[in-house]
Amino acid sequence: MLVDVDAAYYPNPDDYVPQSKKILGKHKLEWPNVIAPNGFNDTVRTFNLSGYNNVLVDAQGIVRGVNLHGKALDDAVDKIVEQKNGETSAR
Image (tube, helix red, strand yellow):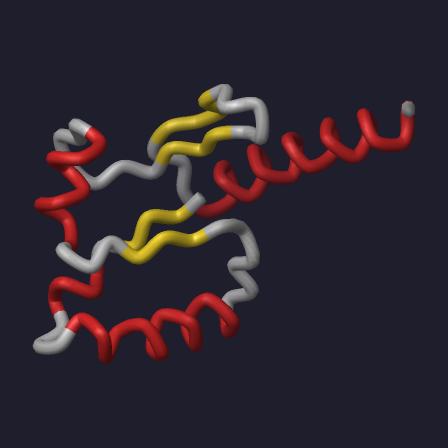
């Protein structure tokens, strides 16, 4: 899941929703996405975060990577998808 904190940086956060949907569609980010209307500060308080992080969590809630980017992130996601597809076909 992606928690998007950018809405708070728009003069009217409601204007960000259509823009966000366009960006998500363009990049084919079809996993669950949440827009935090009050931005990063609210998200930090809610989730007890200390800063921006990229945390990859699988469907079982297991953390599979932290601060992965580029090819490392692609490879980690591919591995999770392959494992999930292997479970599905083994049933």
